[in-house]
Structures are given as C-alpha cells and as structure tokens.
Length: 116
Image: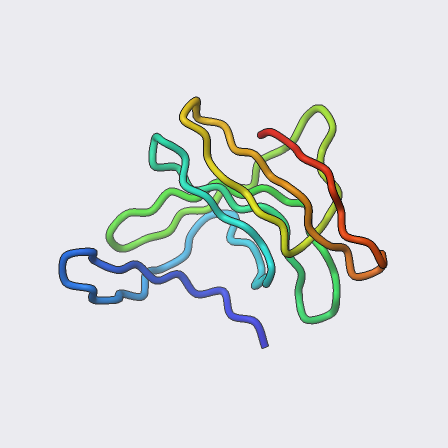
C-alpha cells in the first residue's frame, strides 16, 4: 500500500507535523523525485504506483504551516518518459535537472538527462 501523506518537521525542535493536502494532489507514488528550487518551490516528477503504472507528471508544491497545495504542471518541449528511481536536483538559476531512472517494462536503465 502506498500513502499520500505530507509531513513537515521543524528543524529547531525536530517535531513532525501532518499537514493537509489541497489542489491537484497526486495519487500515492513511490520512486518519484522531489527537489526544492531556490525560491522555495518544491517540484515532484514521476514515480510508480502499486500496479506498476509509471508517471511522467510534474507537480509544483507550495507548503504553509498547515497545508500542502499541489498544482500539476503542463510540460512543453521534449517531455521525459514516465519513470521511477531517477534523480533530480535544483540549480541556482531556478531550474532542475533530472537524470536516468527505470521503466518496469524495459530491461535497461535510462541514461537521459532533462532540464526543467
């Protein structure tokens, strides 16, 4: 079973808090990536669910002290294929780079790189 819970922690007290989801909340996925852009925006890409379905959806997340608000973004250009177990990092210029990953139906790992 996969869970779609959002928790935050205070770095001063190390206390975890469960917060509410709002907006275009993605279903529960595993193997996705998330990164924090310099402006504090969180970006999530891809993953898979318990039925071996993959996603190439991109979500933007804005977090307050009580609510996680999600918005699904539409891509342009060459959109990465659905995948899991990839990496994504934020760059100082406000973009993110995603590398590699797997598709359950392919025997070889992906070796491509995309910039968002």
